[in-house]
Structures are given as structure tokens and as C-alpha cells.
Image (cartoon, rainbow, N blue to C red; front, side, top):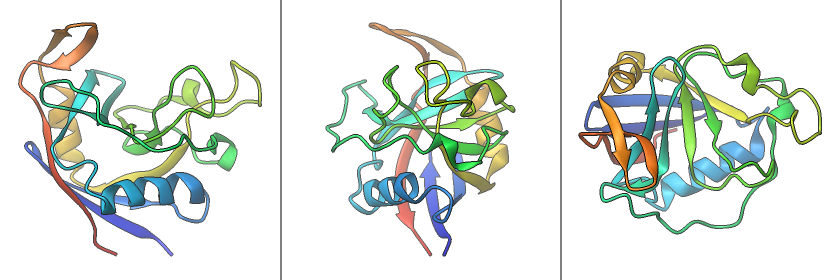
Length: 167
């Protein structure tokens, strides 16, 4: 089975295909947050040209949304951090991913799993953008700056208006 998520953003719509087979925990976790409306009204709060766009954790006032338990890192699933792939964001702790995700805007092989070591865990890819890659490209180009302690924040918020599981 492949889960499809439609994400309506202020920059346009994204169609995301989750890899339920190779990343079952991450895909189910993301779909659960979608079904509960967690992403509705959040923003892409970290945008770095030539790297990635990150969302799922903050509202337009940069207030962090509450999240559930962290999930196990599935980065060793064979999926790679290629352009337009969707991966779980996390802290420096390998098994700390909750709701935040990022979309790679270039191939980021250095984020791939190498070993079960502090430097080797990598970031778990669990899906890919299959529609709206032009939207990802547009978001990547927005002007960014500092917002309190946060850097690389879009100066004009790029909102996730609504995310829904369609298949």
C-alpha cells in the first residue's frame, strides 16, 4: 500500500507519496499527524537554499506545537536523501523524530544512513514529493532571516494551510 498526502500550502499544493513498505514507522507517524490536523496552520520554518525546506513544528508566530512520542530512526531502510524526498527531522539524538519533516531540495547523500553510530545514523527518508516539485523549488527561493533564536526562517511565512490523506 502507498499512502498519498495532499498538502495545501500558501505557495501551492504538494502531492506526497509515503513509502509505507520501507519506512512503516515514519510513514504511519506522518500520516497520523496529518489525520489529526497537526500540520494545518503550521509553516515551513527553516528554509536553506541548496539544501532543504523544513516544516511541521511551528505556527506563523514561531510557537512550537505539542507533539507525541519520538519514533525509532528508520534511516537504514535503503531510501536515500535525494532531491524531493521527504525525511524525518530530529535532534542530534538519533531516535528523536516526532512531527517535523524536511524535503530535500538537492541530493543530500551526507544525510543517508551509514552505521548505527552517533555520526552514522542519518535521517530517515519515508516518502517523496510526486506532484508540486515546482512549489518546493519556489519555497526554497524565499527570503529568510532570523526570528528570535531561529535562523533561516522565511521573512514571509510559507503556511501549510491543510494536509489530508487522500489514498
